[in-house]
Length: 457
Image 1 (cartoon, helix red, strand yellow):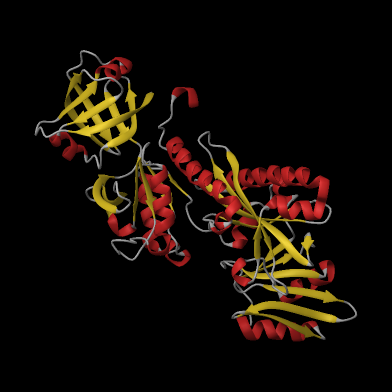
Image 2 (cartoon, helix red, strand yellow; image 1 turned 60 degrees about the vertical axis):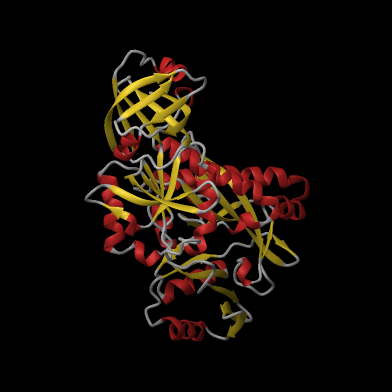
């Protein structure tokens, strides 16, 4: 397959005709052909083929052909040629999300991110966003949202996409039969869909339970622990985290500490305040947890606490935003260091945490060794991402890893998120990494859709 970037134009003829500029026709070695199949997404339409004398790589589509193949807009896009019988425009990339149907913000709070992402792909692909309700499975079309030239939105009906980037925001909806069926319909049609669903905290530890490379970086964790097991781990490690398997943003997390001479201590977040409680016995601690979460304490994971590096007596952890790139390899797109608020259970900014660059955090704790420690953490993050992918049954293209570094420089992974938030990129020093993250998404979509140059394969 050859691949070139071309400029698509529309004409008014009613017949199904495609004109290629002379240099483009020559490069594709289709001089002299009279007809060719034109493909977009899953639609293939035969058309009369003509050439036009014009410098550069240009494609002109008649109105009749444009309607038949549902080409959404003019402008730059890739053109792929398969053995001279067919040319394909695209790729057609769909971002699956949800929204409130407003004309100015069709995807609610996610509209800004979607707009940034689509803008990155404007001159290389047909990049659009859509919701589950926009799909017509009988006709195999999508009523998608495209950016117009002025930064607004325009809707177009297009064929099913070549690849789907899943950014559905609801954990609950994703576990339902409707969304499960939707994803499986894409798979049955051999349409790659990546970032299948959210992880639960316990999922990741189950995935990596027998992966030696990953286990070296995982704190001891137990899913749905009994009270006896919690007591055993507290006496072993003296410091645990107790957290909901499906939680996010630090909600519902408890930090449990055991001092043999002073008793048991629990920290957690209640409303906008940090709470610290002391118990003289383990039984009274468990009674409190059961009163708040039910007798069985199910849906929770207990995890060995790690004594993280600190600044001003406040723990620091790191969010590594990972992507698959255009070569299908895991890379570190961005790293944010998060300093916990005083007395907080977690480092989340909403709970009083502070966002820093990793260089700022590590230079204050490791001095001259900071570059070495950071590189070790990056290498570990790539290995952990590869291990998760190796043991996961669906296609992944993006991960958020919550990583801690202890005072010896050892690297620990606490959580992996299959649909990571982008709050670290709000830091002024990380904005460039945020732009790189968007480019990685586009590049990986090009890879999955097979729109790649020969010299890139």
